[in-house]
Image (cartoon, rainbow, N blue to C red; front, side):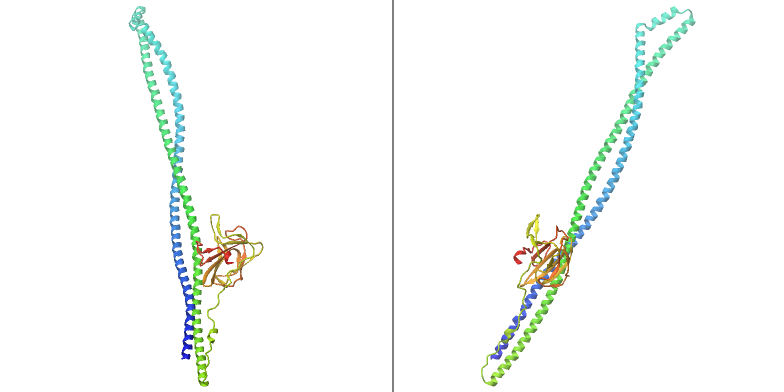
Length: 432
């Protein structure tokens, strides 16, 4: 009866030992599933950004084509305007010449008008019948009369010619003045139309250039988002690989713990059986040994928390700074300052970032909780992705790389995994 009880207790102990590692493995598996879900979402986001970048580049190419066509149209309009202005100059020269001609005709008209006025006064003062009578009376003979009559006829015809020429000159003056004014007005109208066209084209060009600048700014922002998303994707992939290693290690640990528990149970059962047999042979009561209690259970985890990762003064704390979240603390010092791991862990990624500069990400597992620490702006780093590090182990040198203003270490602590929004970031000070 006692032998059966001991075996049952040992078997129960083995059963309780095995699930401990199993539960731990499930936690890491959940973590792995979460990372893979984030990785899928980030990959989709990256594809969307790349598609958006392609669309913006196509829009820029189309807009550039329109700008080129508009520049050609503007050049043509400028050429047409220059041609019209040249025609206006030539027309003005013609107008000037015609004005001189008109001035000459006007002088002739005025002279003729004076002569006509004199003739009219003469005719009014001496009627034509009286003139003829005087010619007959004063003529010596018929020949003299005919000659005088011919002279009078010439005078009368000359008056008629003067009147006709006067009328022609007046018509010519009016016609030339009208033609000149119409030609000048037509050219001025063409010039005004070309100027309006030129102004509209200039306004269109300015609008297109503003739109082009906006498109380039949007393209630049999209490219930054692509770069940031690619970094996030790479970091998530590194976290996935590290977590996958932990899952595999958990499985191996669970299997090893189960095997050790089974072996311990078997050994305890054999010992109990031997003791029971010895007690029965000796015919005396003997208490069974509780040697199984000395068997180790789960390996101890780091209970020491985090240490300050570098020597120096804290120059900037966690919280709002320059209108956004400063997701860590800054430690500054001069000279060659080693940077060490704040706790035991696995290097998720070590690389050169555009914002962090030379940076190291380390994943930690402390008391069943996952943490991620970030060490940024290093002048150099001495660890690689997937490498296991110990608390206090040097991982790099303090520097001034990336988006940095002077030598310092930017240190972040995240409860869980790092993400682009840094939603898991906490103030490291209470943990150090």
